[in-house]
Length: 315
Image (cartoon, rainbow, N blue to C red; front, side):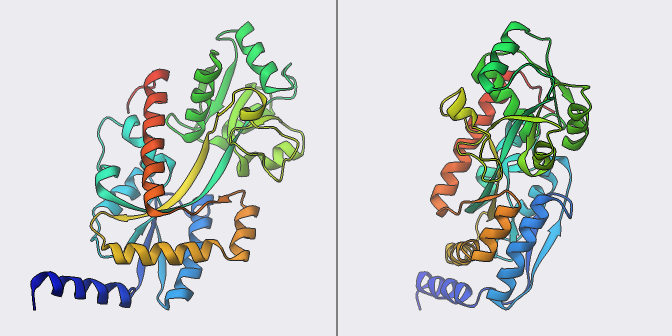
């Protein structure tokens, strides 16, 4: 039998029998956070669908790059999947001077899983009721306003820097160990502004401890229907959301990638998953493999520009 035909048959058998053993699903963030909860919803259902255990492996550290580096070096046999994300797959390349992997080279994109919007919030005492009023207030007080986010390079910090560039305003960053600490200081009035992920700030908005000026996604949040988007209220086309997807090490056989893609899509279309992700404030958004690859390239280019134009120093 010709070698090419034999290889094709082996690949077909491998894909048809996949998975024949447990699959490792690397999440580059700690247990119990939103990325982990999302992963466990998916892996529980893939395990039932495949008749094999899909095991979540939390590998937190270095803004998601530690887990990504482990996944990049794993065998490309389909038995390691990686829950990629905006931090490790689009921001890190321009943020860090030295990277332990090259996302474009080392990963095969499978599908986008979903997006989580960021929210621009202010202390209720700030004299700005709308995004346009906030921009005008910031322009009238250049360098006098401060905003709090988690550490440099987080998607929330870059969302605010992207907003500053688009609005042509000067607001000074105050970096915190995490987004909850920044939110606490906005609630307490120590700082006037923050960009937060929607799940982390929803309760504070609903209890009026902070005022939501705008969603940073292109669409309004169902849980906050009265809060407009930056896109519709001030800066047309503005969009800044965190996102999650699924990748595998480059070299994973295409038939296996196709199977994982098909089964992941089936899971994401399950009504109970749709409702659970809605509760988590995640917009389910599966894509084709090619579309997800294009999306990652576009995101990488966008955040590289923001990091450069904002003068954010490489770490």
